[in-house]
Image (tube, rainbow, N blue to C red; front, side, top):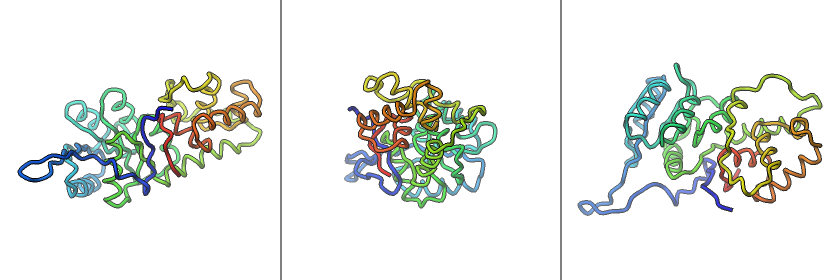
Length: 264
């Protein structure tokens, strides 16, 4: 199977493929800098993050803005490699800014926040975020995460992956009553076109994977697709065998990112 990249769990980042250009310039190694935009409505956070990033020679902070609208405008008018987006910003939050940047630019959004709220985790990934980190990470981890995202990897911090697991496991262990409430923003944001190689799966397997990515339990999937729970379980087993994944959490992340090489 073709794999498009790697989902990197913070603390286990493969630093062998970090971004650097070898060359000679006046007898020294020339390093091509990664252009980073910082978007946060807190000026203290913006300045603090700028100080952290400029302490590393790999980065060039090309801009600093205070909301999602400004972030999108800046990225469209300037050369930006990575956009560090606070998830909670006025006018346009980090998730919405991520959605626009993913659709209309080549910028790679990385959600950076003090919040590890359940409501934002899957929604940010569904919107196209290449990673989701907490602001209290040490500078070296932030540096490695940005480099990994630049190299087309997804970065998920352990606590974020745990949130996804908790949400999906809660759905998997749901009781007999199937929720009839309106879907959340995160559910509504599920892309209609997955990033996976769809030729590897049957149409029904793709249907099951999409519902897993929404956080539905086997019972809910069975009801929605008009099949038995046993049949749903069989499809999940088939999907796991085809992808060499181990559990439904990985299926959800694979469906959303198209990547299978992950650890947790």
